[in-house]
Amino acid sequence: MSSMPLSYPWQMPQWQQLAGLHEGQRFPHALLLGGPSGIGKLQFGRALLCSLLCEHPKNFLACGECHSCQLYQSGSHPDIRELCPEEGKRQIGVDQVRALQQFTSQSAYREGGRKLVLIHPAEAMNPYTANALLKTLEEPAGDTVLVLLSHSPSQLLATIRSRCVQLTFPLPEHNSALKWLQNQLGQTEDAEALLRESGGRPLAAQQLYESDGLSQWRAQDAALAEVVEGKKTVLQLADSWQDREVPEVLEWWLNRLAALIKHLSAGQPLNARWQAYTSMALPAVYLQYEQALGLRATLLRGAALNKRLVLEKLLLDWFDAFYGRAPSRAY
Image 1 (cartoon, rainbow, N blue to C red):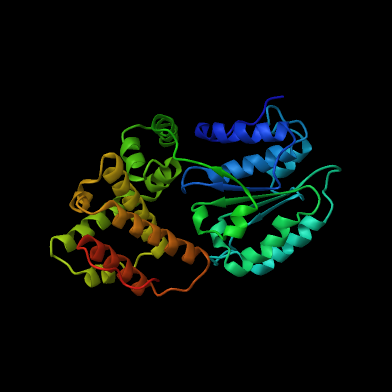
Image 2: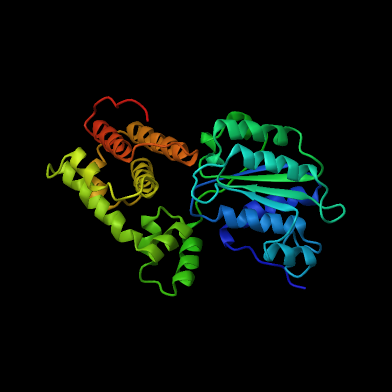
């Protein structure tokens, strides 16, 4: 009987850490998996749940053949729940958490089994939802394991973080990520550029390739440069982006700011269009990055923000920082 392999080789250190806890019967009832988006945390979380349910795991990997594994693969295992924003919504609702509490209070399908919950992304819980979850985290019913995924754990309530064992997922090692991406694309010509443009996040690079997002990112780089060159005002640029979704702009924005931070702090290569900003102080760039993370968390919690005002503030704050002016008020 062969075991199911991990989807991504760069996750093996975290997997081995959890395997050790499981072997020593010290597996936590609440886990917080934190790290950048686009590196495979969701797939890791799902593989973890499958292994915890497996009747014949090998080296903490699910066998893929037992009844529990077959139920999981068919999406019908009664002891698993995934909490994520419902279709058409941006946040996880309080009613979803209340239903979760009822689910965890019930006996497991298999005698001696666990009830398992995967919550993603955890930032999609507003304060009311997060507080509703606290009771389950503090007093889990029976042998329940909750796994929370977060792209930015610092944006979560401190009370949530303190009740979870935190496992950090850094960016994968470059060669490992590049080899995986080349295999997925079936070619090597664009893989290096895609991985670089996506900030070293291989799944994000794959998505860029499949959606032709790279050309849009480069168009946004060029449009931003027009403001620096005096060919366009900030308000004109914000107006020209009204056909774009704020989360998509934020994905590009966070990527570019992260690359600039790496360049300023460690001399890593930088997109040519962003060379104009290398005179900025590192703390100022960090502040812009943290504000953008906060905006993403606000959107994930379902806040209804005016697209035009959000884009205008994002750009105005950036150029205020670029020219050394005080930033405007928060979102």
